[in-house]
Amino acid sequence: MNDIYKVKLTYYAIEQMQDIVSYISTSLLSPEIARGWADFLKGQIARLDFQPHRFRLVEEEPWHSEGLHMMVVRNFNVYYWIDESAMTVWVSGIIYGRQDQMAALRRMPLEK
Image 1 (cartoon, rainbow, N blue to C red):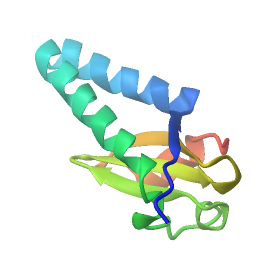
Image 2: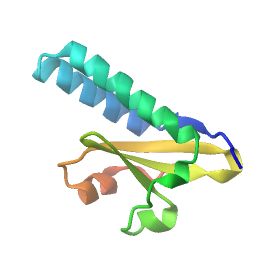
Image 3: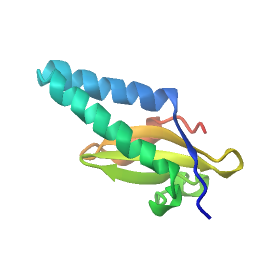
Image 4: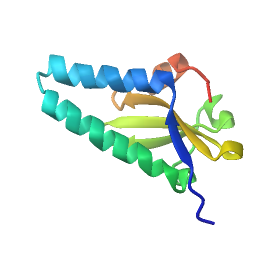
């Protein structure tokens, strides 16, 4: 079965992406790198439209029971839920890999 899913970002994930781009642009003084990173990340996220289950579920609770998946994109972890009834993937968080993932997940709203 080759079903194609819609891929959407929560407001929280959009805000995280904007914060990362802003940090790269202003703190690291690299707006071109920030744009390139954002384009690459968007492209990787868009690929969740096909077989989003290929990435593992988060092992820790309550996220495991909620069906939260994680995809690694370079130095970042992209967290997402799959809404099978709507054939939609909801990206809910983008977290720098060296951050405390559990603390960051606790701050992430459990919205789908």
